[in-house]
Image 1 (cartoon, rainbow over the protein chains, first blue to last red):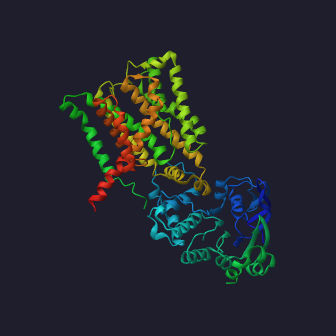
Image 2: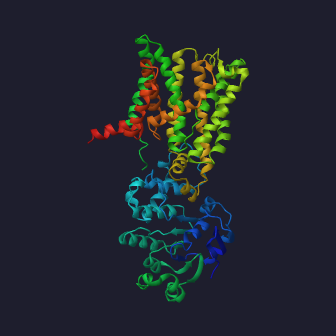
Length: 255
Length: 321
């Protein structure tokens, strides 16, 4: 593989007696869409948390674009191009849809110690925000209060906010969680359109989506990465089938 | 494309109307031959400035400072102490009142803003109590009994603040300035960070904002504006005492902001006027005016969530059907 964009080496995180991340090592190439799957409690969210800097690993290293970011605070990682969307939708409910995305643009447009000029008339913020909203098909809702969006729309907004920071890599924590089939299909289309343009790490329960989108898949069980490979390899891997896909997963995976 | 920070919303129009009436008030007072009205309303204007500063951090930034009256005291004492040493120049007194308030806000905010929620409320209260007792401890300057100011701040021949009407208009102009300043601040990039951090601070950090330094800056700006209101209050009362920064005063400021409408441009104006008018009218009826004021407050909180400002907007909505 070419130089990986993100390299995880021997990452360990314990919560009391539970090993939530157990010696996970993983390389993700530039432009790759890498999915992480695993049963509930496999440590997927803990892993993402360590990548964003919200959780501090007990040992191991995280390298992003060749530099060690293991001890770097969240906002610095974000500024470096590592954007995340949350598993539990976490938008600014009091603000409009456009303001939500504007904030994301603003975060990467230098410092915000600017006290006088109105954000509403600042093209350098408004235009990229509009563009991000268009990419996820939310531009018609720009002036709605975020609190009034449907669940699916909120997830789309999440992605737009992550995109607005012009990231090199997107960390998506269950973007399809709680979505109906129609909304999921829209999200798959959005992600397909982004695929290849930026590197994506996708944590997702929706097997149809994962097997349709991913270049490679890593299976996490009890904090350990038990297999990594392309969708066909993972589908065929007996250990994965036993540990994770089980009865309910196989038919979804086989499609 | 942003939410109406529009100046033409009903509540802002009402605010503009009130400001025009306030500008005419000294004329009414003369017609009614009751100069006391000017004094009464000067006090309201000064509290409205203090409430405007609190609205910046409480209404827009979600920082419930329970010690905000501290800056009224600090600004007041700077004026009082300087006056007692024979320094009457307003050009020195007022900027210094603002600067010392900024210094206190910087140190206190730097510590308080590491906490959240109830802890933030408690620790701001604790610091305000500390400053209160510092005031009590200033034996040289009257301690608990306070300090009388014999000369109001002097601006040479430009402004004679001993003229009650001149002082009234100075307060009104500074109130309009403070309202406009906060109105612009909250729409700037800086203001977006404040509002975003009120809404969802964790997310703000995830998208790349070191929110602490912006919140601290907001805290300091609010302290400065409130310090100026303290300098005005000292001139108005011609007296300063620790009672100016008693925690009940901080509570009153919070009530004014909530009553007027948190996080709205004109809210502090409505809140301060309504609070002090009701206090004045009720206290003429009974010594125990709070018995009536309390339930009134509960009614506003229950039926007009957005405060008085939202009542104007609701009326407009009803009229439009």
